[in-house]
Image 1 (cartoon, rainbow, N blue to C red):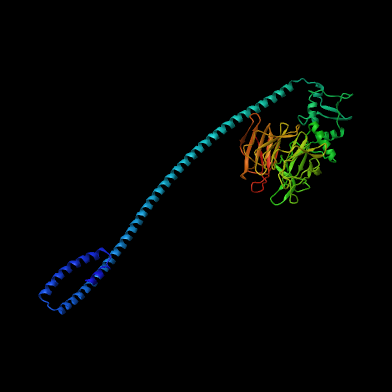
Image 2: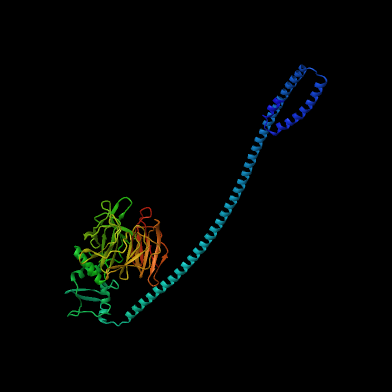
Length: 535
């Protein structure tokens, strides 16, 4: 019994306690039974001890068996507990997975809804922008139509005014009827007598001599009644010989005679060629710098080679003064910036060197205004500069004048309304601002009406009292084909139809009633030539 109690103390679970209670009940029955046996059948102590020994052995065996059962029950309980825990973990994971799946599903649906809302917003915004763009285009088209009508009315007004002036001039009475009817003309020029036909002297319309012989002007006469002109007789002889044979252009002996002859021809209103001369000078062909020059033959629609410059160069400024072509500044492989000035004498087809600039520069622009050439801005090899120089033909030298307010390189310039307009250019970024130079005040002022599009390396020209800006490159490095027009009567810029080809760094010149642009680049060097008519 004591051994049983000792073994029972080892049992820690409820099953062992229940078995112990069962054992106690059985034990009480056995005690009663043993007492009866002892009292009735056993009489001596030895039999009792043997019986107790047998009972002890039986009980110990039973106890061991019961203990083994307890251990098996305990192991089973631990196993069930472990399985229950695993089932709990599995159910928790399954629940967690379901929860995550539901959350992901909700997240995806929300994301899809956000995308749908965003796409709807973008579509609405796009449609709004398209409507606004169409509205702006319609508005711009409407304004352009209005400006076009205004321009047509303005041009018609100018045309009618000119016709009116011509009509008034035609109404004037003939002052000298004799000179208007004479077929042979005697002229005293500086003491030398020249006799020629009316046809020879009047073959160039609107010239000074043609107007002189029209009979509408008072004519100075000498003592013998001949027409008298107080001019150089030798130069007049050369001009008269040209009028007798217009296919033979006079060739002066030297520079001084060439200057004097061109000046005298300008006084008489005589043109040695029936059309303006257009030259394409120097530049860069993608491999090397050039000094060659080509002349546009308008009658044959081709370019012809002329005498080249003495120095190969590109990105220079150029202008015409007194019928001489000036080229100044620029750069080549030898120098980042040049200060040399070369002058082309078109009558002799020769180049000669003139006064140097005070500051070497390239990407400078040039323009002629009021008898002076202006070299404006540029790059001196290390920085963009605001300096401006003017060439005075009488002094044969460049003199510095007021600098620009903003340093500019690759700007466009044009003479307009007795002022100089410097348009756009770059000072590290492309500009749309404009500066105006007042020569009498020697001062640059900001023009209040800026370009619609910032640009540099384009070209500008004046046509029928309106400014046009063509081509160039913008701040996004897009090469442009756009054309902007400034109309003084409504003080604003507007876009016109673009030129056929995008280009920058091209040559440009006004030719009669149109504008010619040639050469340039747009990723490759170009040799194309286009005529642009603002009308």
